Length: 302
Image (cartoon, rainbow, N blue to C red; front, side):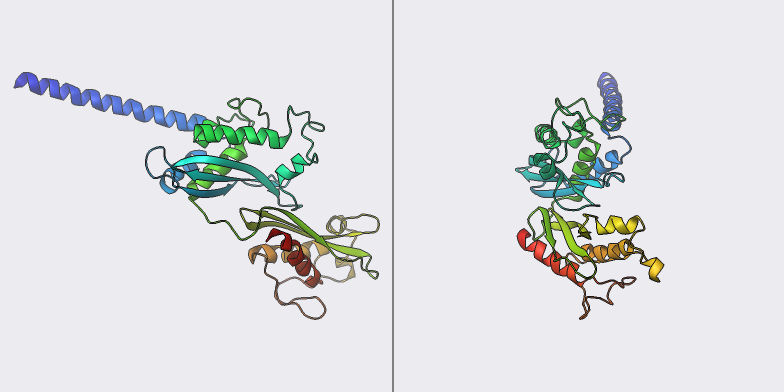
């Protein structure tokens, strides 16, 4: 009996030591795989609660997550994940531009307008590298497998030299949020423009971006005969509304109209006969045509 007790006690002590070692290894892996300057470990933990059912399996459905927009370029990455049978079967990494709206980043790259190879000296275009990152995630089944260095890049995926920290962050955010229901529109960029106003010399333009079926970016602006962008023209101080007695410049007021449009998921405020509205505080300019053009642009997204 004494001998049996000693053996049992030794086994318990050994088991405790092994459990302690296992926990330390787990913590080290999480720290190593976290993207630079992100809350990746917390996001991964949240994903374990919101997006998974049992060990290594996710809930079936579609997941959507974003990373913070780049302040300089305006590109905001998003990831849409498809889970079937508990596994990630498809990953879609793309981005919309919060400044310019319009086409998604993949489309811009596919059309040769992003110029990662011709302008940036990249080994492949952005959409081609994004496809490799997507395939890697489907293979590994965990965003943390994309080990990111201090520059936001990775050596884990052959042929990928672009920054991938946003891909990791958006993927983890998607899994943390759990399955979602896509919005009513088709993803992509949509535009519309009005007629040239003979009195003002400006033609109104609208660009809208849809991601995961929802309106995520809008750009209300205009163009004149010289090709000037109305919003930039105002930012540069050339439009001169405040000089004429207005409380704000044109670009500041139109930004409030864009925000209303986004906050209300594309719905228009009550517009009077002059094309103005009292529904948006701080907006005294004519905005009616912009909401009309936005509705026209979204016809292609239905």
